[in-house]
Image (cartoon, rainbow, N blue to C red; front, side, top):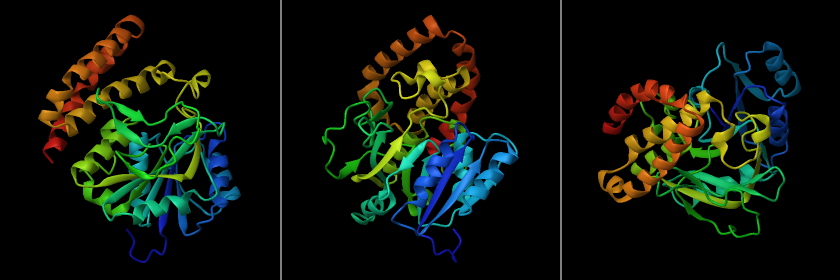
Length: 312
């Protein structure tokens, strides 16, 4: 962190320049009631004209164009490394923030000095469907978004502790990120994309940090807007709408998250749930996507580095 910085919040956005999502996201930042922030955009579009247009239309942006299409975790790490704020808000470019999001979300960090991550209420862009009210660890050791796909009827209006925060709108205390940083970055670069939010939440908890939920901090997310096939946006069963490479990361990263973070006692206790989940998963793969088996075998190389980081 640059000691001369006077910015409280650094916003890090990774974009591939798809469907003008970034423009809507940046426009929502210009309307924020809280103004003490910097905006860092990691441009993975590989289109110089796209980046130049962003700078022309949004001169407050600090743009970092990539010479190659970085994976999501790599790009986030790059953005955090050059950021200056005491708090880091990692945003997907298909997110729009309510005017008071930053101001209200920051309140969550004041409850306890060990709160390292804050979640707001994340709605779909229809404003009526919940996308996430906090990230939790399921019995089958996958990521569970509280309220996912349910109609918002005020059932999650109570502030309180959560396991972690959804990666689309992830607000972190810099002190926490520095504390849990691994040798390949804040976010595990081996993950590429998916499960990076659960991994960082689980890792943070092992280091004594907490997550907190502020329902008054509202954001709107176009679920899958930049990674799914167009007909799968905002649909359940996300894996059906991912290409083979992304689906392979989804499978791999759940295992890496377990290897890195699960205790032996926790694994023994939850093993029946894990086995049931995996039987269902691999039945689906064998029946509908058998080409994934070859990719999965090639991804086994990542287990060694995951075991090394588990020791850390």
